[in-house]
Image (cartoon, rainbow, N blue to C red; front, side, top):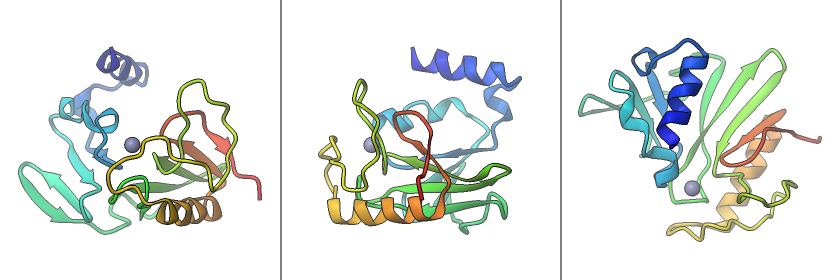
Length: 155
Ligand SMILES: [Zn+2]
């Protein structure tokens, strides 16, 4: 069960759902949003045109609202609206790419900016997706894909 996996991961960090202030929703696919509701005290950074959902209020956000070392970037293409995070770490810049970059289970993980998007989502635009991928790999040293393992960007 996915909720148990998430709760166990939080517990492993000494956290509960009530310790989480912000939940980042990259896009609307069910595998990326269904567990968001367990974080009852959180504000939700949504893909929906730069708004934070906070107790039934929608408040516009700034790309650095999570701090100077975290940038929210628009990475459309996998779906019409999609956002990712660029995080400055001691090891370099890490992109939390959501489904801008992902592999299906069992697929060999070899990055190619032109790789097919298997989802065939409504609003998917391959040209826009490739532009978003290029922006992420240019900016980041490491990529955390929506599905798959973190990898280093070869420059
Ligand atoms: Zn998706």
